[in-house]
Image (tube, rainbow, N blue to C red; front, side):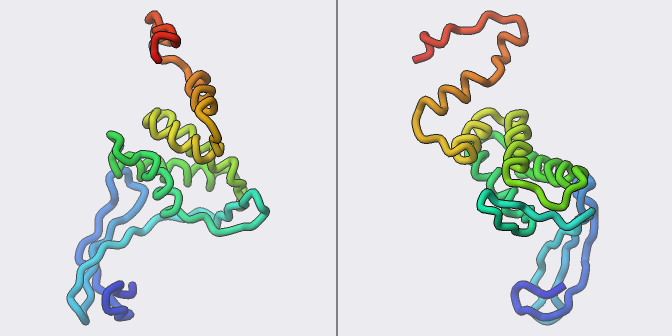
Length: 165
């Protein structure tokens, strides 16, 4: 593994252990040339995935880009990096197990929406506003109105919507 600091072509593994969810191996490395330490992750990749954009362009699936998009939606929310990592791993497993090597952005977006809805509703609404290209406040009202009311599902009496504003 090339050192990211001095670009030396070799590095030594100092520590190796699985991540908490077991989806990757975390390796702590040290460069023999500059003595810098850095961490790498090794993951199983079942197949090469390509994302098909709405324009028809294709690009390789980028796990880091997906994690970054989800992290933006979760910013300043009580969602840990570990939860985001588990969500990204779950989405990647779904994509790989679909049997397709080319995935349309709509399908990827729906997987993210499902995961965020279960993880944090505010992050879900944030992501949806970008993913579904909201143009006005009514778009938010419709999305929130379509969300299942947890209180009603538990048999509690919901608060009338006209008293919320």
